[in-house]
Length: 480
Image (tube, rainbow, N blue to C red; front, side, top):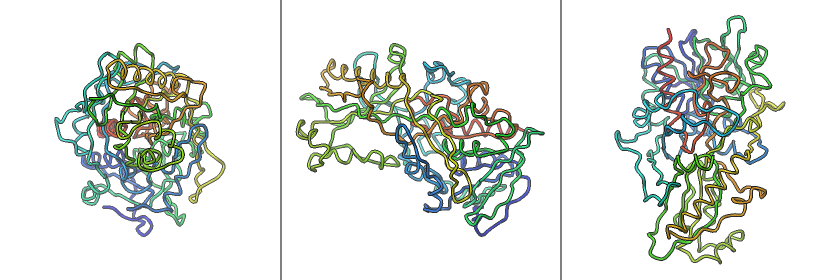
C-alpha cells in the first residue's frame, strides 16, 4: 500500500529489502522482490505529484560543461519516467566485448547477462513482444553508418501504470515523502545497519533491513554514498575512490547543417556508427539524426535543454539564427544532432559542498568535462558523416568549426542521461559495485540504475537499466 510518511509513521521493523527511490529501477525491483514473497519497503522522497519543496532538494550546481541537473530530473513517485520521451534502444554485444580506449576497463559481465532480460524489460515499458528494433530509414552506403534501430514506448509512466500493484502487492510497503538522509555502516559487521529517513518537518527514524538498494539516479546514488560519514570512516568511500567519479552523459552536439539534393526523399533520418567504424577510428559510438528544420521539435524531459530547436523555424525571426535562415532555403534545409557516447573519465565527477539542503544533507556539485578521446569521437563522426552525405549524393553538410577543430570550445548540451557514478567493475580499483551491483566492502548494500554503467554506449539508458534491475532482482531473490 502507498502511504504518506508525512502523516503515516507506520514503518515496520526488519524488512527483507529496503529500496531507496521509486523511479523505473526502484519500482521494478520492488514488484519483483515482493512478488517472490519477501517483505519489501520502497521509499520515495517526493510525493505523488511534482512539488517545489521536493524538487528543490535536487539543486546541483555544475562546472565545466553545463549539466542542467535540477531541470532534467524529477523528484516524485515514478521519478524521471514522469517526463521520459520513451525512446528505447538496447545495448549491443560490442558494448560489452570492447573496452573503452581509456585507462579503465569496460563491463565485467558478458553481454548475455543483460540480453536475457530484454523481453521482460520490453514488456515493462509496453513494447510489443517480438517487435524487434528495426531500422527506420535506409542505411548509408559503406561501412561507417547503419540505419539506427529503436522503438518508442508510449511512454510508460511508472507511477500510473503500476499504481494498482504498488497499492495491492502483498508484503510491499510504499512510503512517499520519506527521504533517506543517512546510511549508517557498521564496520564491525561490514554491513549497513540502518538508514535514517526524514519527512519534511525533520521527523527522523531508523529503518532496518537485511538488504538495502539505492535506486535514486546517478547523481543521488553517489550523493548518498558520499554523504555517509560512517561509510567514509569505514574506508568504503575514500577521496581517491570511484564514488561519484566517471560521470557520463550522452553528447548532444550541434554538428552542423545540411541541404538535401534535389530528388531526395524528405523526412528525418537516423544513423548509427557501425562496429567497423568504431574499431577503425578508435572512437565511441554515436547516433546522428538529420532532421529538416520544419520537423524539429523539442520533447520530453530534454525540452528545456533542446529549446534551441524551437528557434529553428523558418517563419520566425530569431536574432541568433538569422544567418542560418538567410543562407538556406526552407523547408529543404536541416540540422544534424547527435547522441554520442562519452568515455568514463575520473575527472568528470561529483563532489559534496559544505552547504546543506533543507533536510540537512550536504549538497552536491557536478564537474562535467570531456576528454580528448571524446573530442576525437565527435570529430570523426562529424567528418565521416559529412563525407557520406556527399559521396552517396544525399546532400551537402556544413560542419560547425568546433566539430573538426578540437581547439575550439565544443557546442554541446546534455541528454539528461546521467551514468557511471557508481560504475560496475571487477575490483574497487576501477569501480564502486561488483558484478552483482553490490557496493565493494558492504555486504548488504546494492545499487540500481544507470549509475552502475561501466560504459554508456550510445543507447538511451532506460532499457538497459531495466535489464540490469531485473538481473539484480534475480540475484537478490537468490539470497537467503
